Image (cartoon, rainbow, N blue to C red; front, side, top):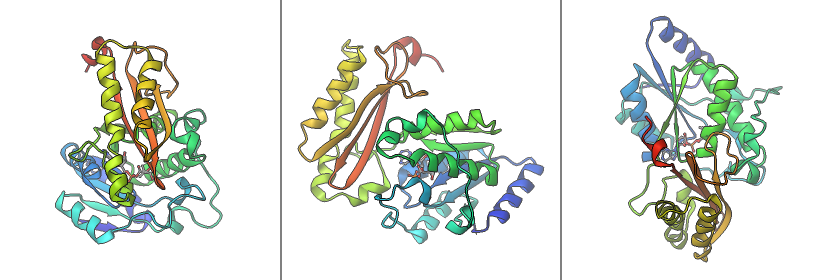
Length: 288
Ligand code: PAJ
């Protein structure tokens, strides 16, 4: 696996690959890689000639009081995992290359950036949309891989890829979980043992709402109340949001008459975790 830092080196490599008709699969990450990230690398490995993984802890998507400085970093561990998965190129640009002095161009997905995590983390999706657009321009991928774990991020990226005419396919991979159901996340490393135990309430709340849906309760508000009740039953959890929304627009729905994203976020101590599930009427779930 080739490890590159220079933006121009990566872009000229991507141009060469495109000229020789080799397909490029891009997996954007912030490192501290776990099985969730590696599932994206495996999907990219199956579907492309060349797998390019970017590793960049993007400062513009962190708020002033957030965890940028203490975000987990393990470059040697990450390099080894990517080597083992057969990635071809690891790009880890220094921050000054991505945002050189004088940098002032940002991408805003105007409505979506205010919803779900965007409501709690103002500016977060502006940072994500900006860095992902830059990664697309530098890496020129045919396919780019993202996790359903970050469902609002997926909505933002799908929208920007369409709105800005990026010639690529956004591929979304399923949520990878720990054996007890907790969605894998680099931030799980922050949890105390008691909070780690309590955090399983997010998955349990989604299971309860999905069961309620299958028992015939199709009103979005009743599913939302079910999520809230489950999370509130865990004293260590502080609810941020529970929502039943359209997966593309992230706007609240009244009834589950089409695929509906059930999304939750809660604080455990100083750590904010998210999770989600999609419910869909039978006619929809039979569609490819
Ligand atoms: P990061 O949190 O490192 O996640 C990188 C990718 O891994 C994202 O697409 C995320 O959805 C996916 N992922 C994380 N946990 C997952 C899990 N348990 N199952 C499946 N996929 C999972 O998301 C970011 O970085 C950044 O915002 C980024 C897109 C790289 C832009 O800076």
